[in-house]
Length: 123
Image (cartoon, rainbow, N blue to C red; front, side, top):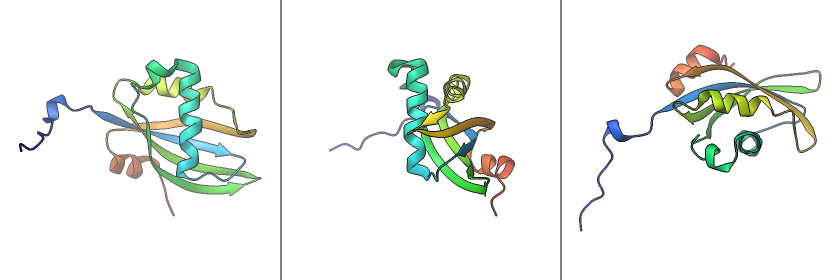
């Protein structure tokens, strides 16, 4: 039997990482972030276009809790070239499961390490 060949780097999909500032009324963990992100993009762009985004939540940090709101920083992977479309879809999200939620993009990075170093101050 022959081994499967690995794609050369020139044929692989390149990714960028969006650093999101998430404010929510309720506590959210990494797995709770996936449905609202996908739902917002699907409602705005449709299933065919959103499937090209290659979205995945990589990291999720609780930054602070004040006045009944939780503030998180999340690193979201998306395919290179679709960053602005993802940002547009996320900007439409105001409620999820009858709770207020606000997502804004802080920055874009090429690697997870650079995203953490530049945009996230974890205590």
